[in-house]
Length: 488
Image 1: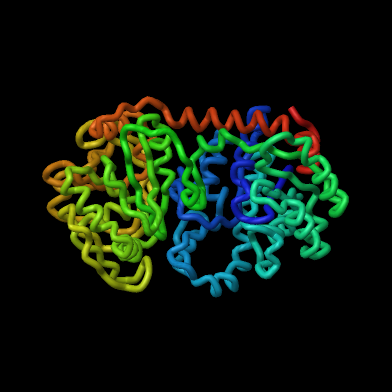
Image 2: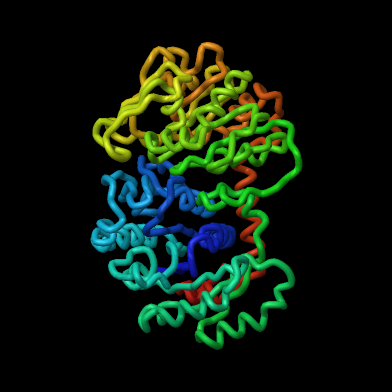
């Protein structure tokens, strides 16, 4: 069995992209590769072929390996519903909501589950590339750990520690981790990687030598700032908090950043379109008056985020947008908000309760029943093919549903459309990934879809990243560390 684990000096140091790039690099060399992350915390999720859900980053990494995603690639997924609680998904299936403190006591019991999933992947591949979570230097979380060193020891996997030089203090981050880790955990780390360097790499040669001298770890290389990563679907809402300036574009589409926004990667294909100015609107800012379309995104906590939306005054902005003739699209939880009423009698997404919706669609939703997890395809009611997936709890009914937004391939209808056709909503994620559906929606806004197959854009970006890492990292050294003796 050959495996290599990338852990980080913190969250958002670029582990997910590096794992995806290495997966593609080794897959391009003809190896059978699988990605793995024992525990992920994200509201960006994907549906697997075996009818479960995993973190979106692991689905992207599976794509990098050119294989279908499976629940074994991310056996434990935490989907935050509040600042202190999250929905727990184990091997693709929801297992209730847990407070953070209670989960700390529960997680150790999940170690056999994650090791079993890892072993299954290892049995079907030549190399497994594992991604850690957060940082092993957060020693207050070490007890019962299943995400970093706890897993690495249990599965006997060598570790490389990743430092992010873009955020600064990378020498202190790596050397500090060496200091605070206990002897066994330090010994599990075979070396380090530097990520996100800008400029002449020779300028940091002395810094890398200092890290190696102070830690005794092997220097496996330094990656530059990976520009191609901007063409990949985003995993973490952190990127939404760092809006990038760009050239003026003719059509503005606004997406309010709900507190528990989920699956916002739905809109990455729109971001790639040269005619579209896609704006994620942060709390405290009004929805832009020039927006042609406002999209209410998915959310992990519909009632709480509906209250959050109103607290920002976005309901007032939205009403003004509609009066001016603007269009609105609700996706999943956003679709539920557009209706007349939302009821959560069992407290599935928080305390039991109900709320009046925005009243822009003649439907209402009851949050009940099994979670729907399935891949779907079909066409928009007004034309345009789509492929995507459903991932939701709740049943939405009402007279508005007699005018469905989507028609699934099996004949089933999905969503609702207002009488004037300007307000639409449905449960399908990933609509804009299909060029036909994206072209149809943009045409209504007076824009032309120019990108074509967004999947090809992502695939090309993965190849570009793999090519950069090939030259930046000591691939033969990493291969030996992983226990893979031959490199094709």
